[in-house]
Image (cartoon, rainbow, N blue to C red; front, side, top):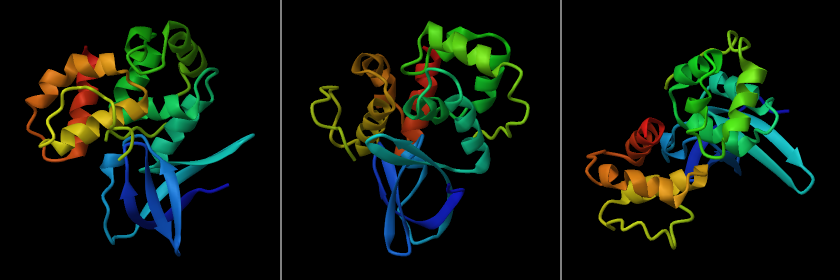
Length: 202
């Protein structure tokens, strides 16, 4: 129904961003909320509406290519919007397409919520069908994490909350927390990108 919305970002959380347009704040679930910043600049975010029996949600994307890849993933049996966003959060989209086309189900199972069966289904449904995808590389839930985080590193705390929002488990996050604590990132986005890279390489 919607192609995109132009507005300004007024809120950023580990789960979603709020895009204000003409006095209306749209809650958009996005792959990596911390790529966005709260400011007065207007920006265009591509959107996709998901309607269920008891819920209507809007999913947001940096560009048309990211939305296109989301729709490809959503067409796979067993892949829902949340799983598709978790896959998109790792911005190595070239690596994703390569894994699909080379039957690398091991790569796909590194994403949260993707088991061997679903990984094989992704390959079955999408192998050889990704040529038309334009590849571009591109605060809630903190209580009770018990991840031994230092309060003076807010970027680290926010990135961990975002990982949990994407579906990664506390156990998975704890395996990379030592490396995250030694990372000298200058934003939550940088911490989250680094964390996702570590999770994909573990």
